[in-house]
Length: 305
Image 1 (cartoon, rainbow, N blue to C red):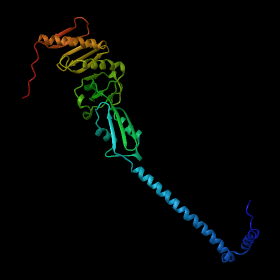
Image 2: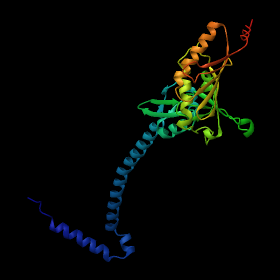
Image 3: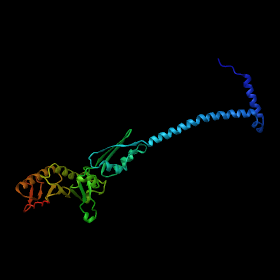
């Protein structure tokens, strides 16, 4: 049952309010009743302010603490994986500009991946953060299989030397990364072999396929069986001329390279057994490949004391 209202009191309050409105500003200002009402209003707003100020302070302090904690979240543990182990952890962090720790609040994973992949020696990069304090960095480097130079470098003045990977992509030679590949063979390109001879450029599959097959086939043999290839020239679309480290010049065609390398290994083995050295050989014929021997065996290399 609703509580009965005090009619007399309600009417009295209304009468007081009407009386206050009838007074002038000066009279109302000095009216005790007006002062009491004003005091009550001030007291009400003061109480509201007392309640609101601590709440605002708590919100401010909480936000400041959260930001401070966020900016204080540093990643100290960096897990690094290099697929081919060509680029060290220190070298990768140098590319990223990371010296000590990584701040979680300012971590830009995509930007870091872009910085790594901007290096032409890196084919792909993957970076992810694992809370609370681990950063995973994985890179896939380009593997050099041959040096590439322009065959007409003396005429054109372009003496640039680059590496080519198994996909035909060109990238710079960096001894810090490629110290184990500095003895790779050199392929002398014809102008028609490539349109953009620069890091990031690519040699088409039709032109690069025989070279890739040649390198793969030669790597199947020990250096005592077939010496390392020093130079590769493709004077015509169907023809390859390779020069071995021992000076032997070999004529090949761009098809059936694996079988031709087997014939070359057989010829070299026969020459060694006979105490001879091969000046040049044509391994294109499947039967009776031709050989030209050096008149006398090359001098034995002098041993350093």
